Image (tube, rainbow, N blue to C red; front, side):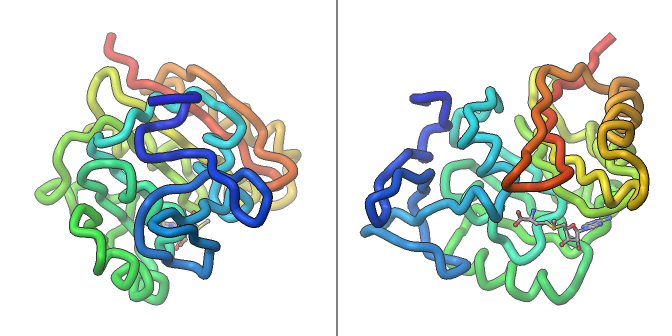
Length: 212
Ligand SMILES: C[S@@+](CC[C@H](N)C(=O)[O-])C[C@H]1O[C@@H](n2cnc3c(N)ncnc32)[C@H](O)[C@@H]1O
């Protein structure tokens, strides 16, 4: 790990601008330089967290459970630097593209499953050191609490809370407070940061399981 980034993630110049990058097959038309592919932080909340220097606890090579994988924009970068990467997505359309992103990545395992029902994939997913969660659904704290069963006691939850998925009219600050309060029943919150302006009305949360 260097510069607070996991092994396998580097800041590299693309067209004269320094950007995060991982090594792997391109997925979404991102610029490449040899084996390296730029990681577009404006399209990825985890990319934005790393770009801003949040201490995510990711070291590289660890098993990861990714909730809300969509077409694979972010989870493909995760699989480039992590170990086994389990990618849960419940919508069939983006999952088709996710399968394409997984084809050249032997450590990326797409699961067409509902993240609110972890029992449906518990037979496949091994214990992980990190859960990355970016699900656009009401009850984001509850999703994190239900999936805590997979996370090592000293592991990290890296959560992007989307205020408008909880309540379209409420003040995002109030929504974040409510989500954090719910989350604290099972997690200790280590850090939070608003992801404005790249991700409007999103809060990044780094948390670890409460063990008492
Ligand atoms: C903002 S998108 C994720 C983008 C993705 N994380 C990325 O950066 O490439 C949110 C995704 O969460 C998925 N989602 C919402 N509720 C879900 C659930 N209960 N289980 C699994 N996926 C869910 C949606 O289908 C959508 O693809």
